[in-house]
Image (cartoon, rainbow, N blue to C red; front, top):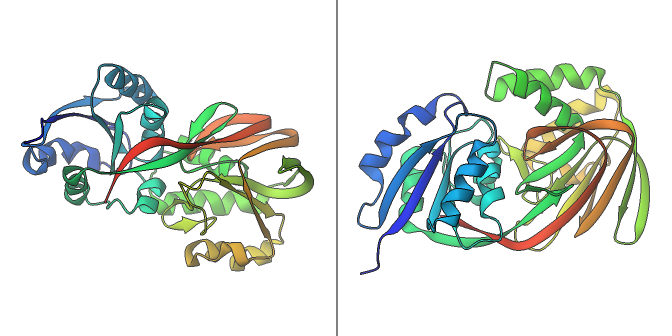
Amino acid sequence: MEPKKNILFIINPTSGIGRTRIVEGKLRRKLDKTKFDYEVAYTDHAHHGVTIAKEASEKGVDIVVSVGGDGSANDVAQALAHTNTMMGIIPVGSGNGLAHYLKIPEGINNAIRVLNRTKVRRIDTASMNGKLFVSIAGLGFDALVAEKFQRSKLRGFFSYCKIAAIEFIRYRCFEYTITFNGKELKRKSTMISLANSDQYGYNARISPKACIDDGYLDLCIIHKMPLAMSIFVIPRLFLHNAHHSRYVEIYKVKEAKLRCEQPVSSHIDGDADGRIEEAIIKVHPLSLNIIVP
């Protein structure tokens, strides 16, 4: 019989729409105690999860589980990338893009069953200006929406859509210089996304052919478009064929540099990350061990 693994659950109590409060009870009932000894820690400020996960990995904890959304998952991944510590996810956030991509179920009981089986997949991570991301980072409109959503008291899909609709009407595009694969492009774009996985969350897929363990990112350039055309382009995200739109360019890259004519909003895995004029993008192949179905 294999020795028990130590597992730490890092719970973000402010994530999503309140489901984090019931996780501890579910763990007591559903986690396989013949396989695991477990502890629970709560975050109490932004990016506290990075510190908790790093300390756990340094102490030799076998598995660290993010209980929250994509921002919480990013915090744990930052600490565990390039280590042997395994990462798990119980997705209870708003969008849960990484969990959707990896097919980790949103139901807490089912997510715990995935942990009980402990099937591990090694995946890529990437960085923008040295800051790690697992799913998607980017500049422009989606990052501006992330800023507004982060400040909003209302969570969930409909709140996000309302903010996006309001901001899209008045958003001004910017000129970008994009360098990759020995070429340089100039584009006036609504946003530029670097996709390691295929989606933002809510099953909105910016790059349906993105693969999280192929050693590449999908560099997605979303062109300026007439407002009237947005009603045709935006639904493509949910129909999983955005890459077929003439307003979308996608390139496979291992490294890239983005420069803008003025500071623009940026985001890392859906969390607003300030305004920048330049972004240096790199892939880190097969750098994270994550538990999947």
